[in-house]
Amino acid sequence: MASVARTFTRAATRTATRTTLANTSRTTFRRAYSSQQSPKSSANPWLILTGAAAAGGLGFYFLNGSGASAASKPFVPTKDDYQRIYNEIAERLEEKDDYDDGSFGPVLLRLAWHASGTYDKETGTGGSNGATMRFAPEGDHGANAGLIAARDFLEPVKAKHPWISYSDLWILAGVCAIQEMQGPIIPYRPGRSDRDAAACTPDGRLPDATQGTNHLRNIFGRMGFNDQEIVALSGAHALGRCHTDRSGFDGPWTFSPTVLTNDYYRLLLEEKWQWKKWNGPAQYEDKTTKSLMMLPTDMALIQDKKMLPYVQKYAKDNDAFFKDFSAVVLKLFELGVPFAEGSENSRWVMKPTWDESS
Ligand code: HEM
Image 1 (tube, protein in one colour):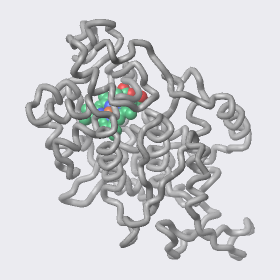
Image 2 (tube, protein in one colour):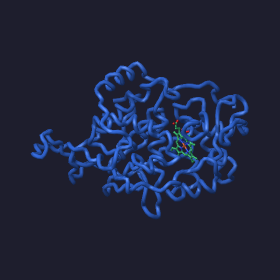
Image 3 (cartoon, rainbow, N blue to C red):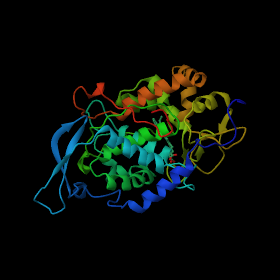
């Protein structure tokens, strides 16, 4: 395992610029909603949704502030408007140096995944359309513990750009998190609309980390994913960490939890893993440094004869991982969304802030 760096690293950053921008933004932003707002308040009083369809998004009318006499000018968001939001999220990812490993990226990705991963292909319910995790009971489901940090992080963005739906915003933030943490491009299209508490999905649709591959096949099969896709999606655990006050588990999977690499697969194969002796839920720790962790579901991927070859493939080939990860995350983020017909041919590439090409 000598080839996998044993020191913790952070994404190469443009921290100075980010901090300046973040500070400016913080004074300008105004918090308008609590993350657990009631269904009623989801209708912003100065925004009326029109039926006008626009390039994958919708047209909006902003009233002139005087109420009913709608001196209105249609606002049709363009790709540039979404890119502006992407950039604002990117600039704030590292605004709190003491948050976890220095970036909100991992928890934003987890929010986008948990919003999408409730999808049930049989009933067409769940998925990223709706952003129903804003409400109880879904926000209180055990699997969603801690995601308030991500939802709260995005509130000022929503307050500043009320035309974007929470559901499009959460997914845009997931795309931003992956790309800014040096992962592959995830093509994006808007078109999600927010739904109320009645559309909350039942508990139990997200995976339980204490289980094995039968459980993973049931849960991900319900969303429409196969073995290869389950393994590719799991590579997201190169990022972030477990928190005792959220899931009960503890620690990061890799030494670079804010940079997306194929290290998750390499470490799974190259490191020796043993059960952690502690007072918490059963999890693995690496024998050498005892500073990394694997969940039972992570280890299950190398214990399963059908899943193992995909772990080996991604461990050997970062490009293959990035290619498959991009495809499977795109699929995940679009589950259950009634996009306009034909819009699958016009997804956008949101430009990473580190991409200096014009
Ligand atoms: C295979 C089934 C999965 C299980 C059982 C699982 C379970 C978990 C658990 C228990 C945590 C720790 C939460 C905490 O304590 O904060 C976690 C974190 C995380 N998961 Fe998963 N997960 C799975 C799949 C995925 C997928 C498909 C993605 C994204 C594509 C993902 C992305 C993440 C990220 C980025 C974090 C770190 C969050 C942070 O640092 O705050 N996971 N996962």
